[in-house]
Image 1 (tube, rainbow, N blue to C red):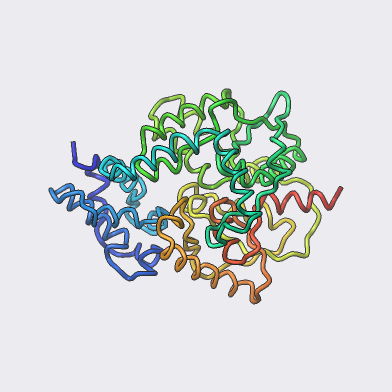
Image 2 (image 1 turned 135 degrees about the horizontal axis):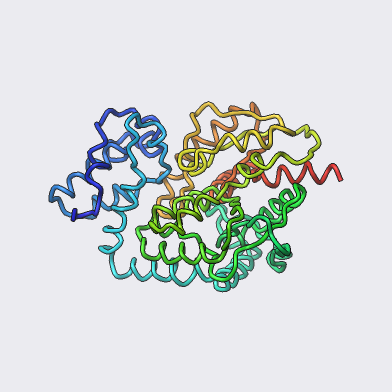
Length: 388
């Protein structure tokens, strides 16, 4: 058993060619070898060779946004994301007592507990109304009317919509838009049953694998059967599609095979009837949609039926959100976002731009920089609504 629990073959796969460097947001910002995928893999090799799991090593790994853009660029198909997630498990067990306590509260008693999350959100709404929540935190304006109204599932569903934890309370109207589109396409939309409110993606990134596995089993049980599971959050979708590897059971593998990103399902099912829009959209690819799910083209196919699309020239680099990364590493995240915002504005040719983003974290982080960001489900629901 290795110190970090890494697969030696995966670790040996990196030949240090450096082709990943231009695709790494933290390397682009800092220029530091230790902030590159190659540098982080070398740090993992050093620990496996006997070096301690020091605070320096911990920071090197934690400073990674885990965008996995390096995987798309790598000619050797090195699975950097799997290695980083595994190494984070060893790091998580060596954190300070204070940090472990904070993590336990967040990951065990807040995110997976929907009622606690709703209560905390109401407190956040009050803080927003009192103007004591800094805009740099990227918290969206939360609709109290939406928060009061839970989503309503259809009888005899033909497809599930996975709602998640934070997104269901902070961006529930995106779910409403997704359901509107799916119902317009003839689907009966079901919702997860008890226990399926958190996918465990943030837990995996934080090295809390056992917690993530427990949540994954609950999510699988919450949406039984064989009908598709549609996810309108790129990060959650990537997590659900990886349950087969995370749990390693036939049931989990069968479940993962049912999972589709929202736009992926829309394109596979057949686009709904829509009217043309005069609005121009700049497409922002969430990293877990592009580099993990590899279905970024479905966003373009779905919304290009009504909207004129523009592309950035930054090779779809990360926006810097990275789950809670913008909170734990705000300065690097801001610098990464500044580059993304500049690329978006350059593509639009003016300051007036609407951005399509299929991930809630990206949407919130870019909105905090002053951009008008809409989920593809909202864009599709708008043109369907105009037709009625």
